[in-house]
Length: 366
Image: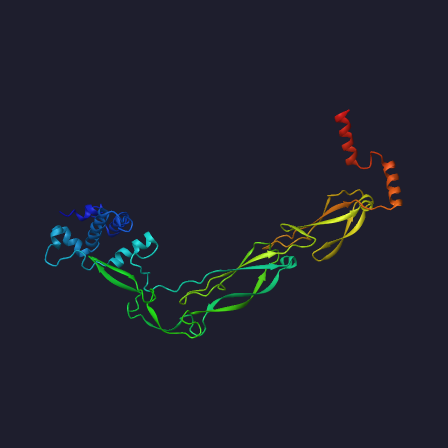
């Protein structure tokens, strides 16, 4: 004895079309043979739910069923699936479940061309280019759409096997199943005569010259996207994108800390002790900087606005000048004599930092 169709779907007899569809989708998702390959009982429940939905989703069949029950389809040749198209009734359902049509068919007929692959190009630029920005020319090997055939691969014709639909149908019991046409690959067209330039591929290998705009303030690892400059698509599909990954070369004098620049400048003992004016490098050239008397090694002087531009706008960074007091490695006799005399005159009070250190030692060990 067949179960009541409303009982099979678990709905009331007053259920509307949306309620019926939701109930059927839930059962089909749970019991579909693809999800239960080794469970014959699940396959039977799936068929039972499909039969119930085939009747109740059709207004005329539902009315007959409400009056006569299963006897409405008991006559010779009567079929509850007559006029029931699984392509339209199940298509949306399995597109949700499995990411595509259960019958291998994309919406709207034959499948469209595939998008081309994205490309990556590593571009090394000088520090000066990263700071100021500008244009750089590059040569990119890639596939481009064949101009001779427009990416079609040659002269095409409607596929004789699927009639241009991209699908071929076959009957399995009360199911009419469609699968991708193996002759045209679901395109709906087949190649009659291949293009002589691309040999039917629709793409040709080329080396393209491109100009890349480098924004001011870029750093290593920044990716610049050139839309549509990647590999050509397949079968008329759109091209991919080109991603240019920047590698900024080191500068011989500057180190980078975000938008700020750091530069180490050596001083002699006399310059640091007496104070002086020195010339320091910047991105725009040399600039004068005043060093106060008694400046210490490691002291940092700041030149505001002499660093790098910030990517995307904003205040420019600073140049940080780190002083390095250099001790001479070779002395003349006279220089040694003068330094020894300086040491005798200075005693323990040669610098506040040294005096403080010696005082702490005395406090610790006296």
